[in-house]
Length: 294
Image 1 (cartoon, one colour):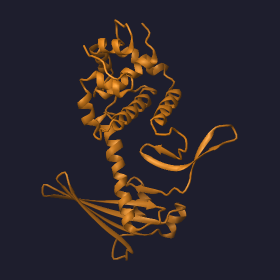
Image 2 (cartoon, rainbow, N blue to C red):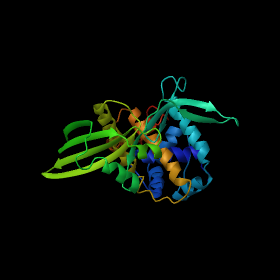
Image 3 (spheres, rainbow, N blue to C red):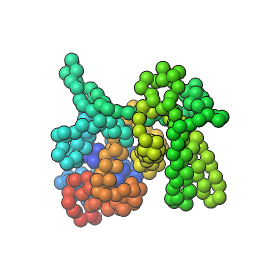
Image 4 (tube, rainbow, N blue to C red):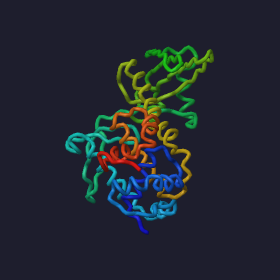
């Protein structure tokens, strides 16, 4: 029996809400909640989609079209819709600007007044070495700031040092104004760990504000990437299909927005709360207000 795409996608979203991860979990989830789903959606399915049905969906799904539908739904959740919307969220980062029409009728996003705070990792060997050398020895560092926090059994201190970028770095990175070093010292259960991080930035701001922005950068990792990788199992997903990985990534984004719109700050706690309550999952997805489960 062929199943409509909307039904397969809805079951996939409900499955992620309940904390299931594998494609076999999709089949078991739909079979377990067959009567409740039939009643809520007005269906009469006797047999429920197997994992093979989802493999077929991944081969036939139009990824770009699905992305456009998901984008329209997410905009519809914003009070006032897209009217006056002047920002673009890219994987947890926000840019402000405008959509400019091109010659072929498409649109491109042009950032306005945007500044850059770029993490320089060890894999960028030359740049990493050049910035690191600016903070070695007895060099005078004009801008310094410190912050301290005790939380979750960790005693953390951030020490920031910043100075104007040298000419050879400015030549290779146009617009760069400062190089930044942040030393993070974490003490937990008597064990002390120190780690250095280096940044390039085009910002011209107070040094304490710069340290605050650096710390907020890690909040993106904690509240977005870590949640997707660990709590929603994105890194553990073994779908090798070229459409399957981005499709389920879209669905995880939808689930995160549904849970946070419902006021659930913790995604894991939200999944645990909803795991065995199909009525609340359907209500959260906007399908129904309440049903009686079997």
